[in-house]
Amino acid sequence: MNEIDDGDNCVYQALGIPDAGDMRAKSDCVMKIGLLLESGRLSKTDAAQKLGLSVEELNEIFRGKFRDLSVAKISGFLEQLKNSRG
Image 1 (spheres, rainbow, N blue to C red):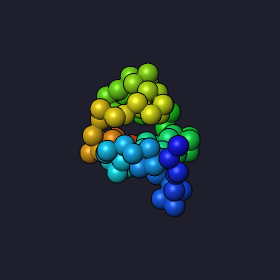
Image 2 (cartoon, helix red, strand yellow; image 1 turned 90 degrees about the vertical axis):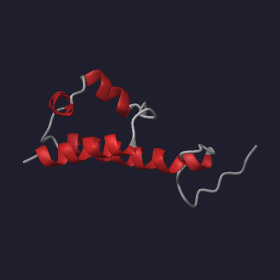
Image 3 (cartoon, rainbow, N blue to C red; image 1 turned 45 degrees about the horizontal axis):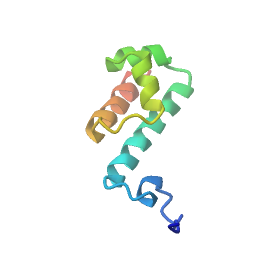
Image 4 (cartoon, rainbow, N blue to C red; image 1 turned 180 degrees about the vertical axis):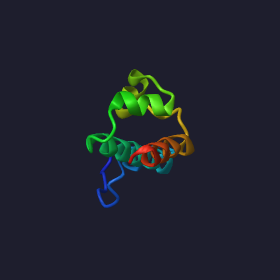
């Protein structure tokens, strides 16, 4: 069994995922999107509509199914939602 160093706290790197940095960046953006929705200023339905996604597609992203999306795409989603609040 491999010993896991928890100093970095990046599960993708600990698992030896080749694109660990990108996966961490994407998961950080998804987490921030979730926090925006938790603020209550935007519903999941409204967020999905603003992003051009179905609610199910947005749910899949929240479930971690974002490997096929680029960092730029997901960070763009975050920026769109941040700019639409208010």
